[in-house]
Amino acid sequence: MAAFAVTGSTTALGALVVGGLGGEAAVAEVVPGQPLALAGVGCLVSLAVGPCPEPEPAGAASRLAALREALAAADAAGVNRVVHLSSAVVYGAAADNDVPLTEDAPVRPDPSFAWAAELAEAERLVAEWRDGHADRAAAVLRPALVVAPSDGGFLPRALGGLSGPRPAGETRPVQFVHVEDVATAVVLCATAVDPVDGLLNVAPEGWIRDDEAAALAGTLLPPPKVPPRLLAPARHLLWAVGVGVTPPEADSYATHPWVVAADRLRALGWSPAYTTEEALVATTSCSTLASLSPHRRQQLLLAGTAALLGGVLLTLAVLLARAVRSARRR
Image (cartoon, rainbow, N blue to C red):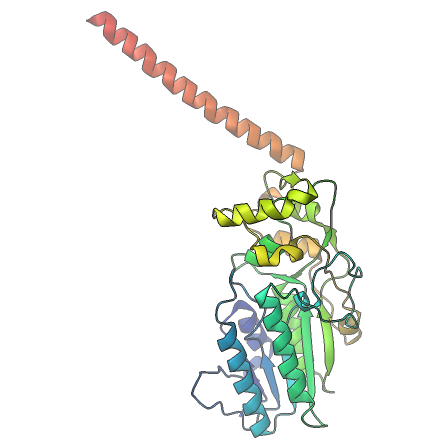
């Protein structure tokens, strides 16, 4: 039996983690109603709850049930080590948040954002498992917004300021971490000689403004700015008509700061390969435009619009000239 078991291995992150653990990794997927055998496993890597790529947290109950089953199986098999992936959203997003947040900050997820509440409950379950025996260790990783080339980027767009209205006259810090760097953090904690225990933020050093993030992502035009008092109604209206990117329940996460410091993880030897800027440019579908200034992108958009209108007018002129010639021939 291999030394590791990995749940949530079917995601892009899961595949990277399994690869990082080498040939020793045994992929363990929790199937409701079926026993999970972890005999001989030394470390359970739990990736099945977060990060969440879906716009709606459908399936939260089943994900938490799967986590309970995995922890129960670890308990029965005598596994004394867990690495669990959570998210920095458990800190909540508020105007009075420290910038950056450390692992000592309280857990206060916005109760209206079901995914954040789910992650906080998952952390509670892991802590309960760890406290059940003196020799157990549980490393709980809380990454910033995770970006990957293979996903649709819903969370970065919804919460990271890449699109949608923003408050006029205000900016906020945002942070992105590349999925490959999250994978190396998970592998580091799972393979450390001394079991890693406790909370660990996962993020590159520093952060950028949300307007800078939109520019780096290659947005043709900057997200519209509206008076702060109209920001929530504007987002809710756009969401209601099917063109918004931020669900109403996640509004606070798209408005207030929740960037984190990863000093504890760096002290263990983790070093991200990507900065926030590099992670964003490397994973956004429009990143080929990111090298252009916002003014230049606006010029290109206006030029394209003018060319389109010119083409329409030229086509109408040609059709009109043909109609006139045809009328004269009669």
